[in-house]
Image (cartoon, rainbow, N blue to C red; front, side):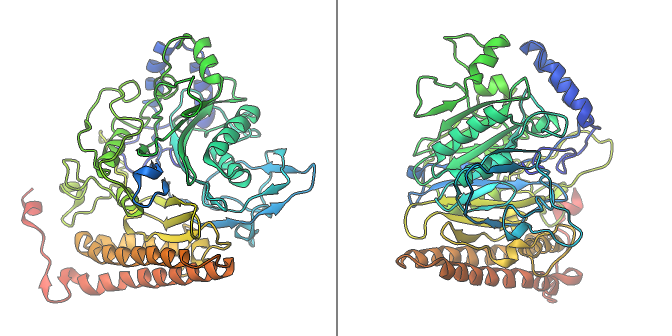
Length: 568
């Protein structure tokens, strides 16, 4: 994802055992591309054993008949590393002269994600910054739509929403101007789709065709060579998978429609299985899906084609890195009978691509999934010695020769942002619920597709310069202060989240009741709500220190270490 799975090392692994350089890795990828499939799997496992492992993003989606309010829900946690760009930016609609070209930039996904004049006031060059140079161009259209973006395009003025998760893939390549010939990354594809399309199906077809025409690159590291998106509008949603083709100049892609009464999850690994090539309503795909598999001897006409088994390289970090999150998310949706173990997730289809939940889900259910640490299960990360005496679920990197891996939770301390798109066609339209930094200590702030500005606090987010004017830093500050007495301190966080997220729902309901509110009115309403969230969350650290300083509970009783921890 943004850095999401694109560079070693991962902070949630006990050990990382070195890495291949980008150039050497690219050479290895090209070499392996010519290896027959059975030998290829073995070779990739050997190659990955020498890699440090990347980070990750988790995405969820729900069809309109699976939700409490009839909206389509699409989510993402943008789980990065130490230099994320968590700013939420508004890109205004624009008209373009006939014959003009749209610049394409190399996407580093670090802060700042872009510097230049092309994408609105959020990215105007600041002192000491140099505008980015394009790596190529595509033909521009006459008019582009307005949208909100973070690392990726999130929601446009017509209610189209997306969430991203980087996946392993068997082919990889580099960007034009950086050792390869491919022009488009998933970052660029999401933005172009936001600019040019109104519907999810239309967006999938556009992104796929552009990637085929201009080439697709995932990243310079093997584990990030492929991508997945949840793409939704008020009527339907799709799972979209894409990876470079063997030539490095085109793409292989497929999309599966999510049944209206189903939910789904993608966690850094493809999930689409057998493609029904005769069902264009449910499946969209490039012809290269079949032609490449047939040319490599992996598939024959008339036989089923399992997209994941054919084009995924499985769980790139370690076993359960993806599968545990899939199991955990479905569990949160009420699907409790799925297995928690398997042999090889690439070929063992132990989890459904989509599933019907036993009860409808809402935006708060999506918040809860993204805050999940497997509480109440045998994988509960708030229990055991590693959680310390106060139940801290976070697991940092260990720079030792110890072997093994931490559990990979859905909630994660190194998240840049988490968002939920509530795609609707009534009231103020689709709503983007945006939470900077870790989901566990953020507060989801709503903003509608009809708005034309981002609250100022959400446009400030330099990850290495603390700012009291930044919502990102307010939540990051809270996330680190709660470690003083985690299980106790989080009670205050949970209370504030409940108060202001419910207030956000009430705000949307009140705005829905107004006939055709002006954008300026909406901007003010959302800005006022954002200010209340920020004031509250900047006050929480002082409240925590005041309550639990020096090991006391409000100065009245000593919070001694629990017996189970002392006796362990």
